[in-house]
Image (cartoon, rainbow, N blue to C red; front, top):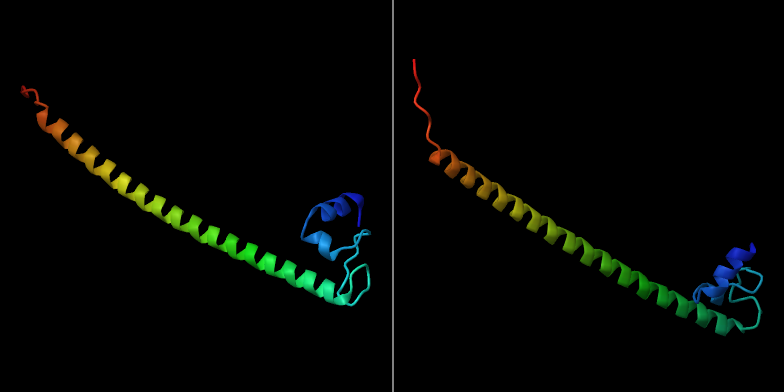
Length: 104
């Protein structure tokens, strides 16, 4: 792993738990500083955190889609109102105009 990626991994609270200082992925069966139970626990904790984060992102996506749908409905209503108002204004304006007499 290059130094830039290694630095990014070291700064990420999720990644630093499962990668060693050399940027190598470790598994709970490897003995690198933590015993297997501690590594398993760390990985399970990370999995739980990631699952919660995913659930939150999915909720945000659903909320954003609902907001979009509401805005689309509002836009449709505004377009309809604008069209109706424009037509009634145009009709009123035409009805008030007097046609000049036609000479033959």
